[in-house]
Amino acid sequence: MPIINRIGDLAPDMAAWRQHLHSIPELSFDCPKTSAFIKERLAEIGVDEVHAGIAQTGIVAIINGQGDGPTIGLRADFDALPIEEETGVDYASTHPGKMHACGHDGHTAMLLGAAKYLTETRNFSGRVALIFQPAEEDGGGGEVMVQEGIMERFEVGEVYAIHNAPGKDFGKFHTRSGPIMAAADTFHIHINGKGGHAARPHDTVDPVVAACAIVTALQTIVSRNHKPLDQLVISTTQIHTGTTDNVIPETAYINGTVRTFSKEVQAMVVSRMEAVVDGTAAAYGCEAKLELEFGYPPTVNDADKAEFAARIAADVAGEPGVDPDVEPVMGAEDFSYMLEARPGAYLMLGQGDGAGVHHPKYNFNDEIAPIGASFFARLVETAQPVGR
Image 1 (spheres, helix red, strand yellow):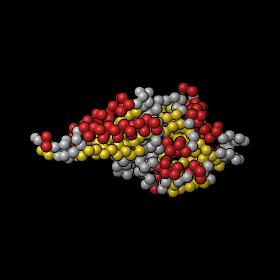
Image 2 (cartoon, helix red, strand yellow):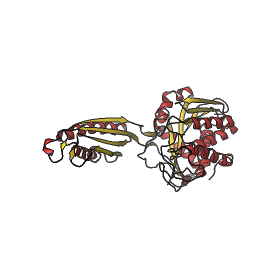
Image 3 (cartoon, helix red, strand yellow):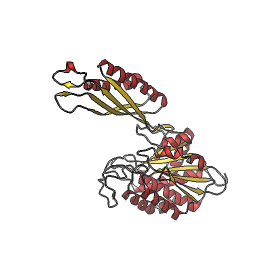
Image 4 (cartoon, one colour):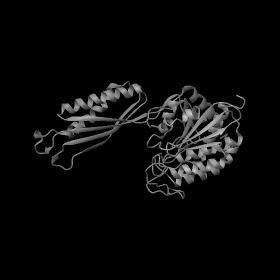
């Protein structure tokens, strides 16, 4: 790997930073220990400005380059997940029921490594805005930071982020132009019938059969209402009803997720779900109410910025080490809000074999940190060369 030599020298530091963060996982916006640790490292590194308290525990740090120029944003998330860790590593979580099961500890370490190199060398014009973000897993910290005005306040012109990818080839970058991750919406369906004795169904209005019919009918939206080339997932993940074998219940509840890549498909799904739920419930003599929670929007890479990012990735990993047209995935990511606010790109970086993200045995591979940090550094130096 042709990583930057100085960043290669920082590999032990990045591993130590990452492993400390791994031991103190915190959730959502409530990340005071994590935020304090990042601020301490930024002070040691010597960045020019540190702005804390954004989205409660988020931070934006500024590094000034040589001369005037634009500001490029680099983002790392730092919240953990409510999972009991099973890795057995000696730096495992010291907070029961919480763990860094998605590699946000590694993302933060990579950005700190890039920050140290960029602060030492300042071989760029304009400024770099280092965005350390809470609540990616739950709460939409990316949206909150955008709503609190970080793009305007720090004059960010473009923005980039990396996510680790277990199961992908070690050190290989993956990105694409356009949608790379899906929107994630949640549906709740409340069905009301008439309960009674299970031996006298004719005296009841059974919400159980209505619920089963609704779940089946929802799948016709995927199979019959959308273009097959437009990715769409509708997954029912919960059905709750009844308490015992000889009672037909009064109510039923259905819950699930919808994943889409475009607002047009999303709007079609909403319209069809409303019709399916109302019509199917009525056919079984029940009443039903559909509630939709709109979550993170699609993560959509700017075409020019994605192409540029792929070229930088090739400088670091070589041409074979980059897939510039990876298939989009149906997971969601709140970096989407930053990409709605500014052009940029989101990339995935393979970390080799191992447990997948959100698994209790997952662990970030520290050996990819110098690769990710080198990408960030090369990106800044190429996008904003001295004398631009």
